[in-house]
Amino acid sequence: MIRYFKFLLSIFLLVLVSCEDNAPMPKPPTYLKAKLPAHSYHKETFEAPFDFNISDLYTLKSPVNCDSNYCEQEIYMGRALNGAINLFYKKIEDKDSLPSLINFSNKEVDFHKIKADQIDFDQIIDRKNSVYGTLFELKGDVATNYQFYLTDSSRNFLRGEVILNCVPNYDSLRNVLAYIKEDLNVMLNTFSWRKN
Image (cartoon, one colour):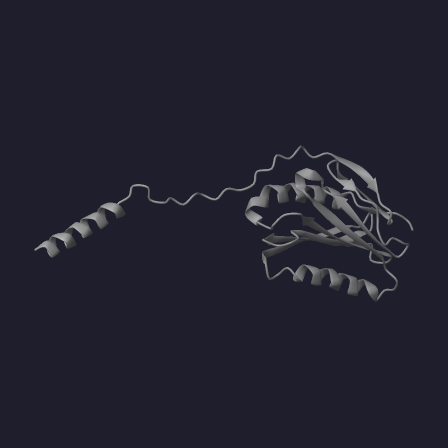
């Protein structure tokens, strides 16, 4: 009988201890809300033979490895966006080099297919200024959400990519990426080649 009583008492105590009101509740996910200023732009002249408008938040860094045939330049996107737009200019040497430059740009985009949920693209055609190219938008947790290339199809080629200095989390970066896309659209719509 005492054994039976001890058994019942232990079950009662076990039930009493396990019935707790503070059951864990999952917290809803939170996302970064960056406060970004209104868009404003100024025209920038680059070492390589092109110009376009950039955001007043952005700072043009000094070019590296720059000569008349090739130039690398970075546009720092400011503390609010914490990233950079890397530009790679190449002079087209002959008619056969343009397809290889475009293929290289497409391979750079394809490299991110593993992580990208979706890849959208917009064709850029400005016959007046001889500007042709493609803007790629990579959706998902990828290292670079935007890449583009531009050419005049005869002498000049430019490839660019946006790199943010943070762990990629597409959902939390959505408002920042929308802000950057608006800046990119202004940059690409005001782009023009200079005679070289």
